[in-house]
Length: 383
Image (cartoon, rainbow, N blue to C red; front, side):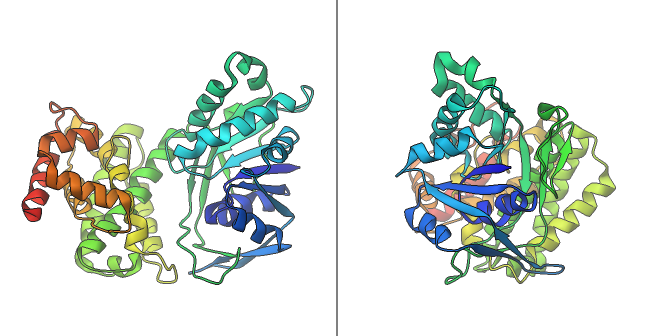
């Protein structure tokens, strides 16, 4: 069995690639970073270091890497004979991956089993996005190409922080992970991925993860930055910040209970697990890394506005979520382009216009006035 994985970065090697290796797949990494590809091909194994309670070292073997920017045809050829294709490149990069998969499917033996395609991205229904990009690339040939593949959405969760220098291609991760995959696209032949679980309805898993892990992580980062704290674990060690993060996640849990009928006690246990993960002192994760790209994180379908808007529409509390957005507006890191752009727009723009353009909400939305209020507060601070 062979898996082609697009994105040989820390998540690709330390999470998706690891589980595919444990499933018995020969691993082919595709990446556009020539130094990374060279480093991977220079070793015969690498180690995934799980740090924290219950963590172990796991060795990955049986892999190679291709620089897709230098040898696209080699990637296409590997896709044409693969059993599985996965990605961990970021949703905005999927459009650059799509042509390689389309070309590989065009070369695929029509009698071969369908290629099993899963985008393992930090977003809702990322595989659907990849399929849409592929459809656009294929044009009139889409029907023939798509007949040779099946597509399944996934929900993935593992904290993989910025790596300490000098580690080579080894990866440090937390022990916890979750990989939920839609069951129905595969029929009776799902991919063999130990540790992944296949579900009939992925939506609750995706939103539980995004509105708890992603919302909680970013909330911790922005309150930590506000307090001048460097590490995520140190931020959660501050009782005031921990209380604010907990209050934010209680609001998102109330929404998950209302929308998906999830059990309140189980959600409370899940929140507690998430907060313990964030507080893991062995993870060298920083508020600057987690908080980067604040404009994206404050956009309509992301971790703050999406749950807060849905909660407001249902008359559920949003005070803590809006306060967390206010903390996000204070994120001011010169090395982060979106942070610089956000502060410029806050200084130069009008509060309602800024709110509409960043959050994607209309002025008549019930959440809109509360966000305008925190935008105005930040603008007053900037002078």
